[in-house]
Image 1 (spheres, rainbow, N blue to C red):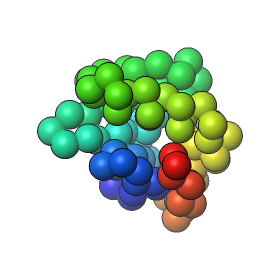
Image 2 (spheres, rainbow, N blue to C red):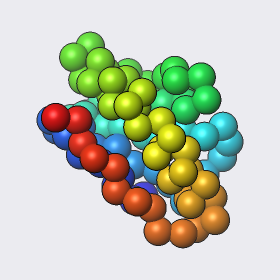
Image 3 (tube, rainbow, N blue to C red):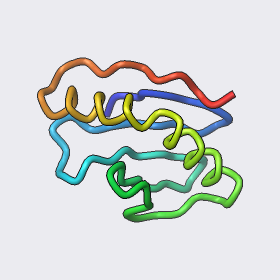
Image 4 (tube, rainbow, N blue to C red):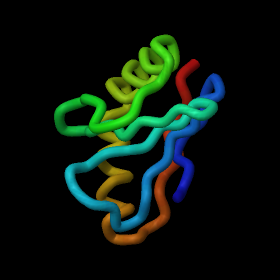
Length: 86
């Protein structure tokens, strides 16, 4: 599972050849979510509120890059790293 970004202890990844709809996975400590890109919503899981806010802010700022990485992942191409939240 390639890591595409890491910030404030949050690790963002995508699986190669994963199931639709386009999404990414974010982990913070023992908590994890799957975040849907087309609707910009959580598909499953939960994060502490502060971490969740950072993931949402980051995803909104990098939506196009995330969708581009999704397309790369579907075709099993190397994913591009995405700038972390600062």
